[in-house]
Image (cartoon, rainbow, N blue to C red; front, side, top):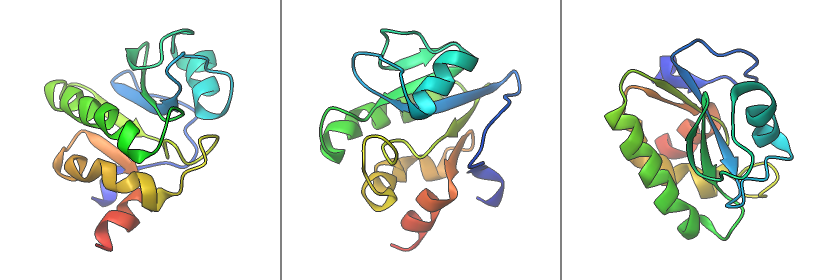
Length: 130
């Protein structure tokens, strides 16, 4: 697990790394990690979900955790099918969307045993406390 912690400040990506960020369904990547994904690593304006450039968008602005879960599940399935990539999950939903790690981290429970998914330390802390 210790080697699968996403840095709190990602400034560069290796060729096989994918920046996983919280988005909105409209794909308006105007702030936070979404803006960085758009400006730096190929997120597509107008695409709110999935792989785009060296990024993967998970919508977090359209409802509560129960609305976000299907997109997290889809992401985990995608990561399992694409072992050639390392997915660096940011604290999706915990910035502009306004959720706390204790609300979002449990959505990633199935990712705990997926070796190419790295999670933020605060997500690990929440999941390991249960």
